[in-house]
Image (cartoon, helix red, strand yellow):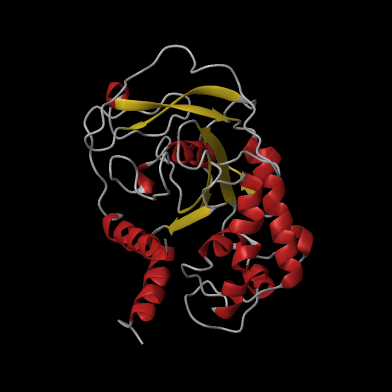
Length: 304
């Protein structure tokens, strides 16, 4: 899993400076996220989700995680260097001098939430930061708004992803790296970074997929311009670009079927039994990726 994650991160860094120009591109129905192609050449996926999860689950879980990390005060660095600075030291540079100020220093962004739902729906197999048409995740834009950091998870709930998979599960690695972001702690670094003021969250249950439930998070320093997606559980057709050699379905009428109970034992939307409990992946924008690539190069012996 880890070598595949590192390759994905490096490839995205190289490709990020090249934005594809796609003829007759269109936004995806419901999410309004750019498909990089026409709807009639897209694939409809049977998806169940609640866009309100960004507030009822994502917002609350991230506040909880940030509060817990404030109390623990781990090492934290934003310059890619090994330092002795702690999370509270960095937060203070953003005028976040109290626990309350830090915990509440971010808001849910509608554009990033739309992108999160779309990117979760683009993960029917394992996890990939490459979109089905092999473009980078930064092509998933809404009215030109894009994310600058992406985390993905499969086979577990959004809450569990934030608190555990992207959270406490990487605390030891963050401290071991003296707060420098790398492939072992990057999710946690993204979740608690004081510079990120805007987040989006989405969890989508994809029928017939490898892990069932997929979660995505996006972060940015700048707000988007989109309107809020309607809250409420819905089972609908979501659309993604067709993968190479995949037959497009085009636009489908109606809905796939009635709402179903997708709650797994232990709470949250569940994945397939017999699979790993959770798989995770992360990718950053250009500036954040530079530090991550340097860390990978050091691990491989290219840098000292």
